[in-house]
Image 1 (tube, rainbow, N blue to C red):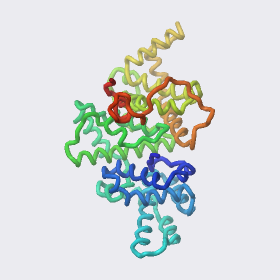
Image 2 (cartoon, rainbow, N blue to C red; image 1 turned 90 degrees about the horizontal axis):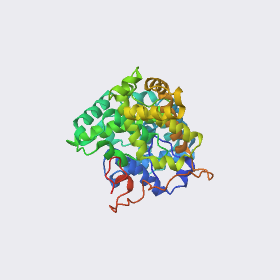
Image 3 (spheres, one colour; image 1 turned 60 degrees about the horizontal axis):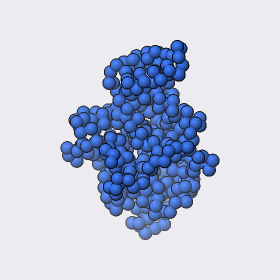
Image 4 (cartoon, rainbow, N blue to C red; image 1 turned 45 degrees about the vertical axis):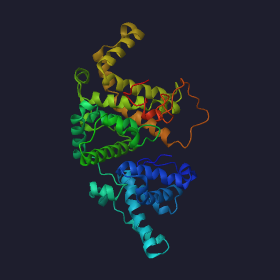
Length: 380
């Protein structure tokens, strides 16, 4: 089991999973967030686990109601769970320190007093992240600057640029399977080595804040692309220059290729979802690389004959589909992620391939996704 508070776990699956496995999953998330060893994260994980248990069981009902109230007020799920886990932590501390029973009424009153306005105004800093491991600050200009500078400073070490990072993390957050930061960090960072602990913490916080922002946009059914990565008003400029939108598309394409087997496990070939996903990827491929765009036009010309569109006309046509492609790509992934189990009628037709979590066939002893399955890895 994998856990990320930004994505609501299926209640039945969550409660049917062994308690220790649930705790371990939450510990892994906390460990990835703050960079501490698993055994040092249990105190931060227990209150989060308790809140998620109550939400899944709807017992007491005030817990789920509080979460829904915060989400309706525009608070992202990660921040909402953290605010509620802080209340839970206080309640558990009183039980331990005073050797008393859990005061359900006091706990309910404390949840009712959580004010979404105060949560929005109380943006945590680095120290807050370490003390409250579930908290993730709102993505802002400082986070964007950190990722821009990191990409530029480590470009020679194959670190992703800011737009590529935004596109890659969009593909991760839209994936039907939850993907933990420990799985993709080295892909985004390339061969870069942090200059110091301060840079490592700043980049990690920026990544988590960006993921949270993307998750919120996906949940709100809005295009999850930063404003400065959006396409130019003239779609041909995207093909003429190596601009930020084309980089964003390439980052997304890199992530989708890395997660291709996950999509294949979920999407039935030639289904409506498969066709919608294919059209979205075609749009991203077109704007991600001019040569690919020209190839798409050539292949279309061979299929349609004299009525084929020019490169300029195709760019105009695809430009009108960009927001739809972004929204549909995310919506399809979110739909399959929320399903408690795949229907038995699904029998995708695809070639046999190595799963991301299977041992790499090169004999390294590492998982395929961490070895030859990484984008840009040298295959044996």
